Image (cartoon, rainbow, N blue to C red; front, side):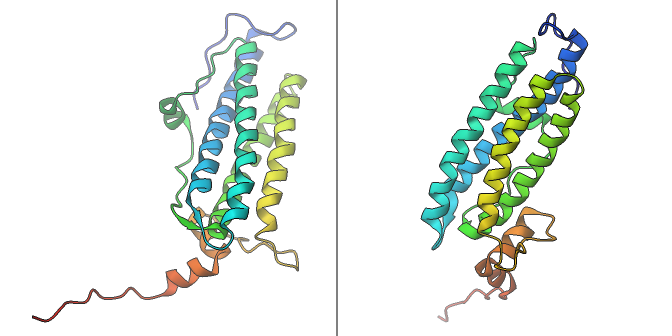
Length: 203
């Protein structure tokens, strides 16, 4: 992501260079949060199977909370003298990840993929909080507050993926599709099943 322009003004006690650094950090986090909110809603609409209602209802409060995080992030960018960019075109052009790759699927398969999504968002949020901490403790505090909720939401997701022995079904997976297959026995079975040949009627 390109550095943000140097703002004409920023928060008292910070230099405009500090403001620019923080705006660049927060702009990337704003994209991640907006993308996460859309992904959560996509999953909410596309879960099926016996765990449907539990997962469907779990995701709406997470979506609302993430949208509030995005709003707080955008407002902090404005307070720092920057310009928050919330349009889909800017998000797509500046993000460093691909679209969520799972369509209609078993709820547990979606949770396996969502666990990887949360891992990526949390890792990048932690890195941004660490960098912000050396410049501005207020911005760091904003990101840390987000992390408290994001890590709790991932815990909710992982509770569906964890065995009684404490291991995750998605352990060792690197892509959303791999995680979805590892999490859902039905998806694994479908992947192993040989494709049926198309039948041709005799005339």
